[in-house]
Length: 463
Ligand SMILES: *Cc1c(COP(=O)(O)O)cnc(C)c1O
Image (cartoon, rainbow, N blue to C red; front, side):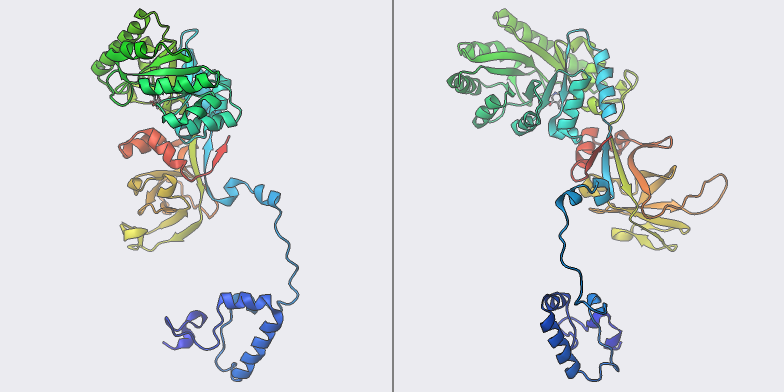
């Protein structure tokens, strides 16, 4: 091949043809017009026969005259800020706050008067955005909030939220000043932590409210159900400590079998009784997660903890007949590229998918870095112009492809999506649905992991 046939004067690594001007050189030259003109004169002198072997120039140099380009006018920051997230990146999440409200209201209806509703907004509200979800839940009938970590609690306080906040674990003792300063209640199960918490509170003239975490069988955190009385006796002397509540967590509330659930429930009620037997008020007694709220109303006690169902998901199939929930999260994208791929040609890494012909392959700009798990490759559908189109080829980190059948046959309505058209990755449209429940099922996981995954990088739009 003649070197002239190669683009941009590139003649192989380390062999750039004389006269080749790199982009960096061109920019530098633009900064100094005199120098650029001198360089150009020099080059003309060097290569008098340039016409016979046309020299390749950087794109910018093609412009007739760079000398009278307009003065530099930087972009206005407010103008940049005003560009919608959906116009910055053609992939986004929509969070339906009306669905959050609906799910709170549906839950409230199942509670006895006086039973409090705690909204679990840990992990940035399972990816839905902690502050917006907390505000919506509180406005819809929730009384209490729970987070997993002290920083998550601080985020809510800094946003102006005044409702009680419980951390669902015992944080490091070094975070005690933050708990007190931001009025965040820890879960406590250790006497040493409790005393230290009480001491720090006392030295600031404060009370030290906490919820006692009881281990009734999950064996994750908490004081053993039969050691509750002994722990409380150990710390009861401290004047600052206030037992705000007592709770446990079920390992199997979402499982078809009920034996283990029954064992945990019994142990919990015994633990609460043992507190009362000491003459101590247990405060707010709570244990029900989403599955237990709907399946086992007998364990509502004084408060229930609504997690995954706050976001519209069923913790188990048994729940479906008990309540109608609305999923709050949907995943959207716009097509960034389309092509007709000839029969037999492959698509994406590994070329595992092969075109069967008469198909249009469309690309959307989201991938496994956005929570569209690679394990779904070839095994999920997108809603496109009123049809379900199969995702094909391996899902890449930042992009993936889907297939559109271009054939005309029977009652099949032919669609022809174009760059810029909107696609639903998860959600409902035109009477069709791709649910986060089914994505979780296909991946043999739970919805929690799927919604949190989608929130990893996709911007959230509240609707
Ligand atoms: C996460 C969590 C919940 C919420 O559970 P869901 O199954 O999502 O309703 C409730 N209680 C504790 C202690 C938790 O850690």
